[in-house]
Length: 287
Ligand code: AMP
Image 1 (cartoon, rainbow, N blue to C red):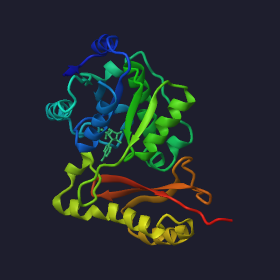
Image 2 (image 1 turned 45 degrees about the vertical axis):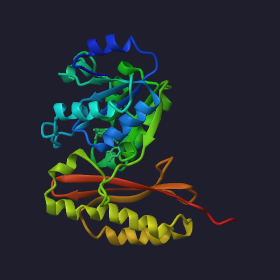
Image 3 (image 1 turned 90 degrees about the vertical axis):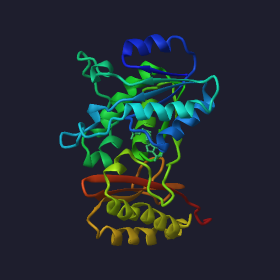
Image 4 (image 1 turned 90 degrees about the horizontal axis):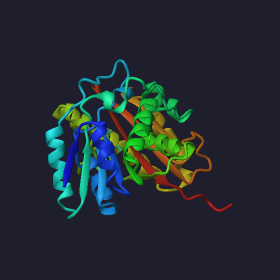
């Protein structure tokens, strides 16, 4: 069963009927990346709440909130297909008709995860992660999930949410999910549809560069300097918004003692910013 709810009042009434639930927050225009989160949630919970909400708070003044693709009918058909693989399951889709359903006019609180929210992606998009944390906080309060599922594609976002939940002692488990890619390596994204066929082809530079850095490091900390040198060379191409190695847990630039690092990148393809990352587990020589 798939239920579509358009108001917060309906959501609260429905939620009072269920005990433990999984939750998948999205902005819609669904693809297999989103559906992989839903299918994992359905494999763990018989009731899954799934939000489709283009959150105005996470778009900057020069970012196109209005241009973001809204395809509710198509999204519901993908959700129904996934749900049908799990007999007796229930998916509650919350797609508010108006942003005021999520952010009543009387509410002007912002959740800010200090430090993490203004670093790297947050430096380029001021206020973005405050908008993300604030909407996720609000959606957690409404859906009261036991587990919430987030794609590791948005790695910094995943860390922001984990930190928010820890700092505010929220009773929800945050489950990070692997990046779903096309067979050629391009990470699935709602923004890929804006790419021309030529740009799509050229976008492979992103996953190929990450893969080549991953191969250069080959899981050995001794190779990090070589990878750093390669990064400097790659950055001669000014289309990189950034290409950096960070500690996967602390997000620190200092990776001298890291056991796991994440290589994070954004490549500018015309007007579209393509975001991707790759994890590398490191072994260190015995001392
Ligand atoms: P969005 O609708 O872009 O806000 O994404 C909603 C959720 O889907 C976030 O947790 C994303 O990280 C996740 N997601 C988006 N693309 C992918 C992908 N290619 N693989 C896995 N998860 C993804």
